[in-house]
Length: 509
Image (cartoon, rainbow, N blue to C red; front, side):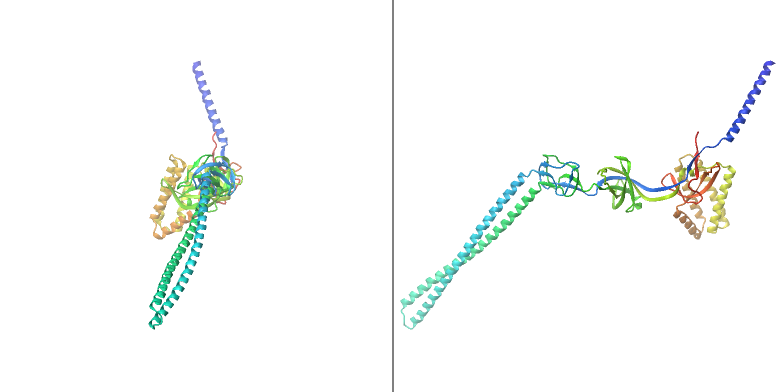
């Protein structure tokens, strides 16, 4: 019996301890303060950017080549050498080209001597022509005089004044002088032809001199090409030849050096996808970084949007050129740049973390239903007033809103990430719009589409955030905001101010 008493006493003590524990747990939980994760609302700047990558290049890069074939006999510059225009960079072995110049000079001297000889021949031919002309004139005068005497004696013979012997004598003299005149005429014509010939020889000699002068000039140019000079001021960023190397000039000029004209002014050549190219404009601000200086942000400006497309594996991009100041010359040609093109920037706007929209303050189920019902009634009232809906259309609208709410609740309760849920909810909202349009008449459809268009133009989205006051009271506020590509939204409402605390969630213990 004593043992039975002990057991009852034991059970009584245990029961009392359990009751005390439950009582203590209840009151400790009730008085426990919830530790919220909050964010103090501030003003700031937000940017819309298009990210891409590209290569740094000098604005003007000149390839220096060789127009002749030969061996490099002198190499006067190296990588990173600063050069000025016409500075000697290298020399190709000039000996064979100097030999060609000397040969061309000798050929020119021979041609000049030949010209002098032909000029002398021309002068001699001119003298001979004058001599033959004088002889011809003399023979002609003698023949004419002999003819006159012969004819005179012939007339006297007819009168019986002179004998036949005398007439025959004068006739013979006349015929002899006439033959001499014909011979002198032939000599004159030969001298004239010879003069034309030697004149042609002079012209030929002059032409040969012009030819030899051209060959000499060409040889001198070839010799000058053995001097490889800088075409511009700049810096040698690449050298592709060594001392003693033979360069062969063929259809493609061999490149010996690459000179960047001004490395203080560079550019980034990048490509932007066709989906984003419409947002790019000249003069837009650009920020970029390079792997060599990961802690530095460099600045630039869009100076050119190229219209020629680049297609790689069916992906279309367009070239965008960014101007860069490189006064300290730490950026080098060929560096890979990670580029952010700032297409839009808003300054001094109220920013709230996107997470603040996800936190829902604990409400009773009755309060949630009441709140949702009030919201649906407001939507129905606004659409009824704006579109002048009849009773049947209002009933169908109420049913559509009820089905939409049910579908959105199921989406929110389902598994999946927030981005996927958001996309599904947007699809559901679009489905509601299409179904609602199907119950409207054409005039109402036009009005409803204008309402949707106005809503899209404003780009404002509505949402709700929970604000924690200093007395630990929580107030829910409906806000209008603009979505961004960042983790922040831009508040457009006037009912929330910088310095207030928005709840992001409950801190985990």
